[in-house]
Length: 487
Image (cartoon, rainbow, N blue to C red):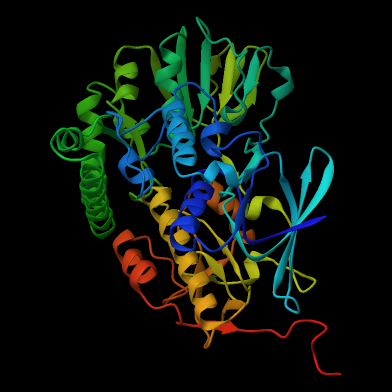
């Protein structure tokens, strides 16, 4: 049996829950279902269970535009974020539209029918859905596999090796010597948390990352909430944080040398007597990769107290008792945590076909950062790299409802981005981070001009996606139904 919905949303994380809300609020006459492969909602915030898991953006921008974040902490822990998502889904009735354990295996578009056919696996059985519009809210990385380099000697190590993406409840780190490999957001989160119970934690990095300390509580936000209704206080704080982030991002990109000095000098103040030049001075410019946030300077505190240390070197091989470095030094360890990154995976890794032809994102150009050239009735939710994911996810879901409403008003069944004239292609993600570079051959491209250019600017996107026109290089059409064509 095949079920039909106007919209099928794949994924019940932040993006999928937001999509459900916007569909209900802006296109209430459209039926929708959210297909989630896991046993519960939450996406990233349900998957990651490692110690200290938290947001690396403030919750006034990582939270939904329509649901105020009211906890005192702006930098929130994973369980608190998951509770917020649960509460949001229940409060707005989005949870009633979620089908759990529905792992989508493929999607096929038929121009003759102007329909998507979506096939999912449910406990080993195959179920089929059709829909007029397919909205992918699957995130951007592989849930089944993290990235771990092929280090020599893995099998020789007598202790335990674990990737943070697959942290288990039986990992005992109390009183243990721990080596955390990596210097990104996951590593700087893990180190101070593990250091609370471990004998010692060493953060082993190949190269430094820009690390910024920030209070876990936003005093302005908390003061506003004591004076104003929650929604008003939240809205003001959200825009305050957006504008501040945009200001500092532009300033750092415009004056990279000054920004680099300022960021490194802040670390010097936190770590007097430490070798900041070696361990905390990156070779690249600020925002060539994402900055790492440490709330309340917790990482620096653990380093000052001697509970943790940083080593900058490359790995020669694993040994029975730890990790031998290229310098010849050996770091003894009982537990090694490979915080070495994730694997980018668009569309949840599922094959998508357009009239029988496999859709290959690398051969297409992104339209407004959410749709693809020549691919009808299809959008993905992909957040910002220089700001909170949800800011863009909210705008994307809202824009999709604008398209749906325009299609209904115009009596059209198909909407397709079309390149009307050639545009120079540039990378979809202009980041030098390893996970981006590894995936570059599989990623789509963007153009050097609108609407094919991906803004990394919330203010511009609000104007373009929420209030701007929808006809720019967009084709609305009405395919003839198969079987109704003239003989």
